[in-house]
Amino acid sequence: MIIQVKNFVSLDQATKLASENQSFCIQMDDKILLITGSGIKNVPNELEDVTDKFWVFPNDMQLASKVFNSAKRKIALANVEIGGDTKNTLLIGGPCSVESESQIRSSAELLKSLGLTTLRGGCFKPRTSPYSFQGMGLDGLKLLAQMREDYGLNVITEARDATHIHEIIEYTDVIQIGAKAMYDQGILRACAKTLKPVLIKRGFGTTLQEFVQAAEFVLSGGNPNVMLCERGLRTFETGTRFTLDLCGVAWLQEFTNLPIILDPSHAMGYAYGVPSLAKACVAMGIDGLLIETHPDPKVAKSDASQQLDYANFKDLFYSLKPVAESVGYKMV
Ligand code: PEP
Ligand code: MN
Image 1: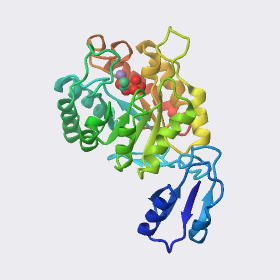
Image 2 (image 1 turned 90 degrees about the vertical axis):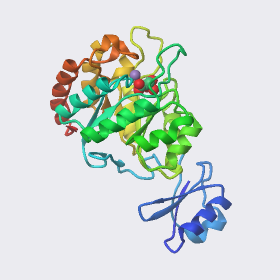
Image 3 (image 1 turned 90 degrees about the horizontal axis):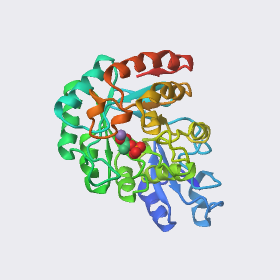
Image 4 (image 1 turned 135 degrees about the vertical axis):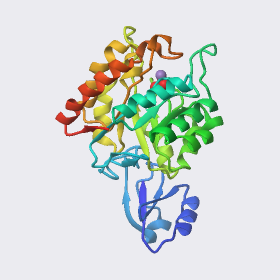
C-alpha cells in the first residue's frame, strides 16, 4: 500500500510514523509517501487521521506501477532527457569493456561525430570465468570520467558488487546494475541513497515481477530515477546467446511507469543479428537502446562476437532514425 499523507504532516513526523509502521517514507515532488508491503489492504487505524490518499496493489509492484502513477517517469541525464513525454530513444554506445585510453577515446569520438550523447563501457566486469579479462577497474572509471569532461558525454558503467559502488556513483552519470548483479542488496540499497539515474538489467532467469521488485528497492529507498533494461533470457535455444523477451517489454510498457531500455547486443551474442533486432526494438517505441561497439571487435577483450565495428554502428544509427520517427520517437 502507498499512503500519501496530509500536507500538515512534516517529513520528520512522517519518517517517525514510517518507522513505527514498518514502512518506507519518501518525498516525491511536494508529496510525502509512506509505503508498506502490498499485503496491507486497509489504512492502519493509527494512520487514518494523517492519510490524504492511498493506493492498494495486488503485489509488491507499487511505486513502479501504473496503478500508482500512469505517467512514465522522466529521467534527466546531464545533456539529454528520456521518458516522460520526451519521446526520445537514447542510443547508448561504446565497448563492452574499457580497454585503453585510445580505444575509449575513439568510441567517444564516434558518438560525438554522430551527435549522440551517451557513452558506456565496463570497468568492473562480471565475468563467468576468473581467468577472463576482469576490466580496468578504477583506472577505467577515470578514463570514462575523462571522456565525459573532454567530449561532454554522459557516461555509464556497471557496478559488479558493492565494493566499488561509491566510486561508480562519483565518476558516472548513470549506474548500470548488470543481469548477474540485479539481486545484489548492497548495490540496490546504495543506489537508493543517491539521485543518480540507475539502469537495472533483467537477470537472464528473472521473472518480470522479480525484475520490477529490484527497481522497487531503489524507488522505495528514495531514488526515483530508475530505468529497466531487457537484455535477453536463457532459453533452450543455443543458436543465439540469449532470447530477447519483447513480450516482456510490452508487459513492462503496459504495467509500469519506468523508462525501458533494450539491449539486443547481449541478447543476440552475434553482431550479424544486432542491426535487425535493434530496429525491431526501436519500433516498439522505447526509451533507449544499448549497442556494443568496438574499433576492432575481433580483438575485443570481452564480448568480441557481438560488438559492431564503427562502420556498422554508423549504418545502424542512420537506419534507426526513420524507424524511431515512424513510431513518433527521435534517436538521441
Ligand atoms: C554488459 O552490459 O556488458 C554486461 C555484462 O551485460 P549483462 O549484465 O546484461 O550480462
Ligand atoms: Mn558486454
